[in-house]
Image (cartoon, rainbow, N blue to C red; front, side):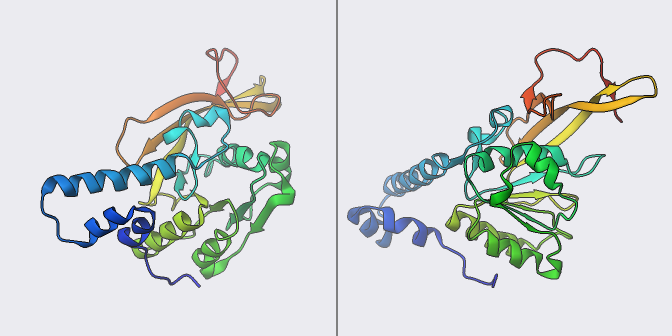
Length: 256
């Protein structure tokens, strides 16, 4: 199911090129100038295509992500935190595409909370759960990525570079977005890595009370090595909304 040939650059780009460019690509290059010009045209076509395929993303997260949102055909990693893999951040990432009508899938996350997902605006009628894919987790992920817009996977172990390359090619072909969470989320093919830090809760009094809201610092770093972007967010606020923190907290208790 998951073994398939990789797409070469020539196969991906030649159908979109003009006849004279195809002839130029097939013939020996006569000068470095011609080669450089052709490479620039190819990069321009690919960049335009990728940049124009952004999923609707929650405004609180969009400005942190490369390109201003989740790209179709790309992978993203949610790094583990002291309290798990960042379940609320995952819900925030899914909320935008789901509200816009996208189908989403969750693979290998048996603890995924249905009620929490619904309370944050995720449409359960367009949500597919595969809580225990077993040893076939990578094949299952690739299969449902053929038909769903956003797929979340919590891998039980690190995948090989060869399998990651084949999965990345499949995502680009289908236009699906993959979000990898958990302790094995650091995949080399990831467009960006999201992490949480400095978590603070409100609602706790002197030994009593109920947790009502949480502030966290979300940091996004990219594989290209650009400067990481960070923002202080409510994940969620007392009304179960994901919003930017506009003022320093004065009544929060830090959680280690």
